[in-house]
Image (cartoon, rainbow over all chains, first blue to last red; front, side):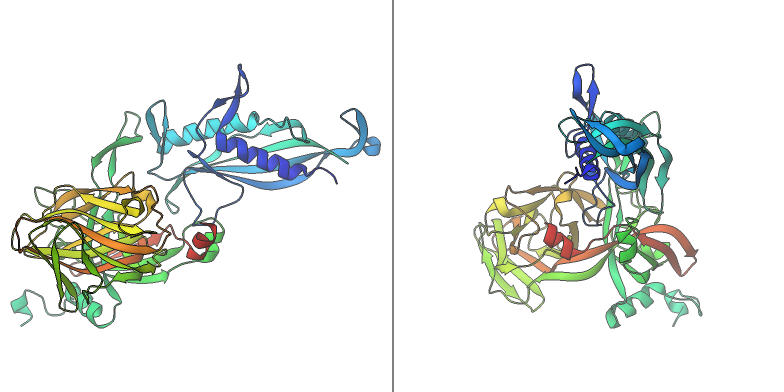
Length: 172
Length: 328
């Protein structure tokens, strides 16, 4: 059975966002933006009774062939395999309620300050997401930057949205 | 007769209309007015962690709720979370300021008018009402109490040990769908009977590990009129606490939970902790209800005139209890 790359990538992203881990000079995953539980991460828009804020929603929006090689021959580990380079795109949404706060260096961050912190650290986490230990070989990642940042009065939520693309080797 | 009541012929006495509707049909209800606490801002315009104005939580505001949409589950499913819209009619602001707590007194200058983002907490349905029509399941706890009832109100007469608790007990009873508790309480015999606390035991009886405990700060039970208490019944209130307002004065309510408390567990006991002044003091309690609320948030002011006010409101939160029970 071919490796289930899409689920591996999606779940690894969710796990790392939950823990808030990024890389520093001390090594892979040695930094952390927040403690597990400070920010709730969903793999889809949550059911209303599950919705907890602040949250990050990881929503897969696109998937397809990025590069097809002649004969579809790829090196996989020490041997050859059939495959292509595939891409998968995600939208990531950061959301917070007005009254939400997380404590950063003993200071409660709320509203715009909290969103600023969530956005940059969300970028840190997804750019440093480490797939070592999985069977998925990630070749490239592209992070597009946050947009549509602001407060939505209808939803009574602070919101920001970004997209990212991960290119991975799909072998079989 | 109309002019003798100070009302112009042709005018609408909205308070009376709401009262009539409430008594005859239930379309008009007494809702709880809620304004969340206001936090101070830093030099960059962002709210911090210090409350500069406490929450306003005033029960018993008459209002007519006319929903356009009570709950839209498709919008819920899409993640939008805007799941209902309603038009809310209230009496005019001068009449509102005649209601208890709504006066803008020197002790409580914070209520000026109903503003955008203020909330009307309505009852979607009563999930469980603690019976006060019979005395059989009411028990003296650490206090020495004799019970009586007139069919609506439980009357607890304190004996020689007038400092402690008394409680209602029942077999396991579902209260999962409820998210607020309300009741009315008053006293007689002394003006300084302290309302020490009240507790709901869920999952076990008379063991504080199973209790959610609400502790008002230095609150004396009123002797002349009923005090209406309306507080959240969810685990999320524990950190921030709640409020009881009486005569415009806020009494902070500390909310703590025992190590085994789970609001999804079945209800077992409801306990009142009081500290009486003397043997023979009486505490009256009625209308103890666990209810499922709808919080209507004011998004726009549609009409403002001498007779009534119309607000366009939206509910931005909701839930399906089947999922709560299934997913725990």
